Length: 226
Image 1 (cartoon, rainbow, N blue to C red):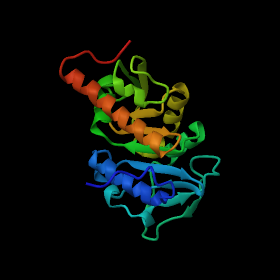
Image 2: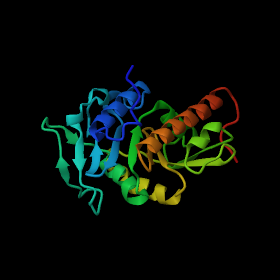
Image 3: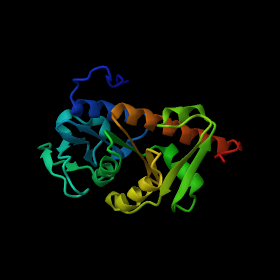
Image 4: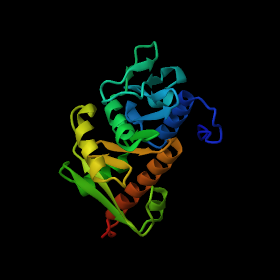
């Protein structure tokens, strides 16, 4: 099993960190079959894993570096990229939503089955909706959330291309300013934070909560909250 990312190594190169995190997320079932992704903002710009590759096999030289001076999600400039014909992540405009609208330091995209089932539970037709839970200790892993608060996470409908989610994701982020996640029906979840540590902590906490609520429903226990 891969070692945990070295959050006590402040000089660790970001491309190396992204590769470590992708291996960890693969073990969690978040980036199976080339799905999912991760992006981290650094002093030089925005680092991003490539699209359509097996994330657990990434090497530091496969990571893209993009300018963070873009005025829109599609006009960012590739500062440095791999020479192996890899493509910039299809998630790029979704990641830039978090950078532009929330001043995020890192964004993670998971294809976790628990995120997919949680969205299906609260939006069974695949349309917009809202995941709700209350009274779970792991809510304390989320920004500004206590265990007895009611958590509400927006769900948006999926689209044929990931980039087509940009507008609906942005609208959901603006409608839920106190939440650092957006669920995509039948697809997965986007989670961000002020840095990679907070983003990872919140991504793990959300996944736990999604699983807890889905399993509660399976067992016939009450789900959701007030």
